[in-house]
Length: 419
Image (cartoon, rainbow, N blue to C red; front, side, top):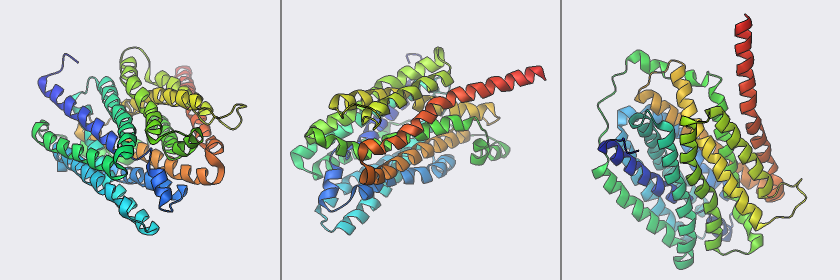
C-alpha cells in the first residue's frame, strides 16, 4: 500500500476506523442480550427476530441507499450513517429499565431498525468508496477493510461482555455509542470530499439497473454463496450463547468465544484478497472457502449424525475455521459481482459501484436476517445441534456450486468450439 497517495491513505484510515467501530456497535449485544431478553419474558424465537430485524432492514434499504448515493453524497451519507448508529446504540442502553415484555420487545425492534438504517448508509458508502478510490486493488483493500470489520467483531462481544460484568446492561452501549459519536465528528472534519460529480450519461445510468444485473446468471454464484454464509452466521449468533451454557462460562468468556469467527475472518480476508489478485482464480478461492465453511459446521454442534459429544474445543476450532472460510466468500463475492457487472457492459462509474454495493449489502443482510430469525425458531423446536442441519445443507450446496459452475463453463466452451 506504499504506492497510495496521501488522499488514499486518509480515506483508507477513516474507512478502517469506521468499520471497526461500526462492527463493534453491531456485535456488542451478542454475549448478554439473550439472557437479558429471557429475564424480561422474551422467547428465543422473538429475540432471534430482534437480532434479525437489523439485517432485514439492511436488506430492504441497501438497494435504495446504493441507488441514491450520488444524489446524497458519499461523505454526507457516511457521516449521517455513523451518527445514526451512535445515537441508536446509546438509546438501546436504556431498554433494560423496561419491565413490560411487550413494550420491551417493541422498543427493541424500533431502536434496532433505526440502528440498521444508519449501518446501511455507512456500509453502502464504505463499499462504494473502496471501489471508487482503489479500483486497481479492490480485492486487497476490501480484504484489509474486512480485517478492520473483523476486529470490530472481536472487540464488540469481548468489550460488551467485560463492560456488562462491570456495569450491567447500560454501560456497554453508552461507552461504544459515545466512541462512535466522537468518530462521526472526527470523520466529518477529516474524511476527504468525494471527487468531482460523475459524468456518466443518462444511457449509462439507465443500463446500470438492479434487474439488469440480476438477469446475469453468473452473478448468482457469488450472491448465493454470500447469502448462505451469512445465513449461518445469523444462526450461530442467535443460538451459540444458548449452546455454550452447558459449559458454564462467564459473560466475558462467552464474549471471548464469539470473537473467534471475527478474529480469523480478520486475519484471512486480506490474505484471500491478495491471493485472488495474484495467485488463485476467484472461483477456486470460493471453492476452497466454501469447503472450509461446510467442514466447520459439521463439528460446531457437532452435527447430530456425528458420533461425538459437544465440546468447547470443537466450538473453538469450528469458529476459527468458519472465520477463515468466510473471509474467502466475502472478498470473492464482492469483487466477483463487481467484475460480472463490468464484464457485461456496466459502466465503470460510481453508479455501478453503488449498485453493486447495494445488492451485495442487501444479500448479506438478508442471509443474516433469515439465519437469525430461522435460528430462533429452530432453537425453540429442535435445539442447536439438530437445528444446525439446515445451515449444514445450505453450506453443502455452496461447496459444490463452484464445481458445477466451472463444469457448465467448460461444457459451454467445448460446445462453442465444436460448433
